Amino acid sequence: MCRHLAYVGSPAGLAHPLFDAPQSLAKQAEHPRHQISGTSNPDGWGVAWYTEGRAEPEWYRTVTPMWDDETFAARAAALSSGAYIAAARLASPGASLVDTGNAPFVCGRWAFSLNGLVHGFTEGIGDELRSRLHPDRHAAIAGDADTEVLFALVLQELDAGADPPTALSSVVRDVLAITTGRLNLLLTDGRRLYATRVGNSLFRMGSVIASEPIDDDAAWVEVTDHSLVVLAGECVDTTPL
Image (cartoon, rainbow, N blue to C red):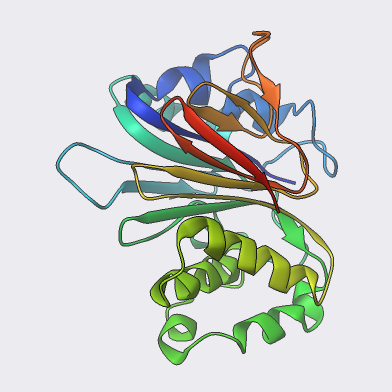
């Protein structure tokens, strides 16, 4: 359910990992190799990328399947960035199929994605999670995607002074205390990348973290399930959740 990919490091082109690599994100979207549920991710996609001199990322989302988005594929050939998050969507059951429901979600300098789902989200769990949000965070939610609610909870933890690893760990713990789910979260501020693996596939090579490898390079390493990764360029720290 969904595929996502993120990078943080020296400026690098977007076209190769997103569209041109042997198992690029666009190819993963159409023909995933490691996906647990669903055989493709046709419900649109999105990308947030950081440019020099700007704290907030550029942002693009569409309901066009990623493998059919020829317009952005051509645009990507001219884009480079030192940090980005991209995600191809297979919508959770009951979610609206609109571009505003697609990851990544952006707020200020933060960009966020979920590869997974919260079980029972449309049967009361979503309401329970929303009830934990402060009024301003609750009011900022525009759609009905579980990803957006999780992002709001993460932002609320950050507002309270938590560092990003603590914020992600707290949200994962709080969700799993009331339901089950697959919670592969990605969060970046354009300088560091934070990722959890809970239930879905996740791999890392150098400065890239992805739901599955974008090529057959033997350097790809599978991230341990129920762990959290902090990535700053080539520097990586992995801890249990």
